[in-house]
Image 1 (cartoon, rainbow, N blue to C red):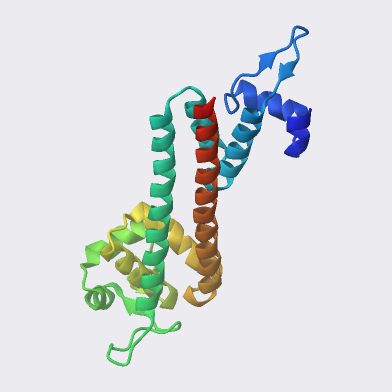
Image 2: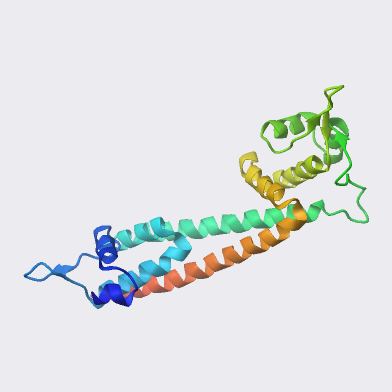
Amino acid sequence: MDLARGHGLSTQAVRNYEEAGVLPAAERTPHGYRTYTPLHARALDAFLALVPGHGHRTASAIMRAVNEGAADEAFRLIDESHAQLLDDRRTLRAVENALRDLEPTAAAPATPTATAESFIGPLADQLGIRPATLRAWEKAGLVRPRRDPLTGYRVYDGAAVRDARLTRQLRRGGYPLEQIAPLLAQVRAAGGPEPLEAALLTWRERLSARGRALLSGAAELDAYLQARTRG
């Protein structure tokens, strides 16, 4: 099948796309063979261009909406992908800002080092929060103090202080605790804020690639919409 061969796909894959509504229904010859036109090629071009930016599921839904004549629904799905990308960019910026605020400045008071320890009261005072807030963060798994074996008091080592400060910065940015937890997990997995810089760069590049893919997908979809209009 020329359509499949021209797009590096199997014949069955093209049939599956048609059955899923990604491609418009093909006409049949008297012997039952499908007849694919340049319009189908345009549809397949649009779908394959949409996948990198929207993902397979959303790209399929966009194409089904277009083929069913529900262009407004297709545009709504596209808007949602752009909104998600914007939200991801804001999250990245918040993490970058929070990590930047962790760096000591000449004007700022000295903060605990990787080996310093603090009790809950002094740490809460340093962060400008109540001890109860630190306990809530601990319950949510965001901060992990150890307990002094003799007194039972919470002891915050350098890593726990870092996590508390990062949580405080992200909370100031309006992020709920459930969104902060995976970000702290990345910091811990990277071994701290410094090694996380490489991960943030990769994250930024990935978001830029997604943005370019959304533009490419939009151009191909627009070409398909125009081809459908011309009939």
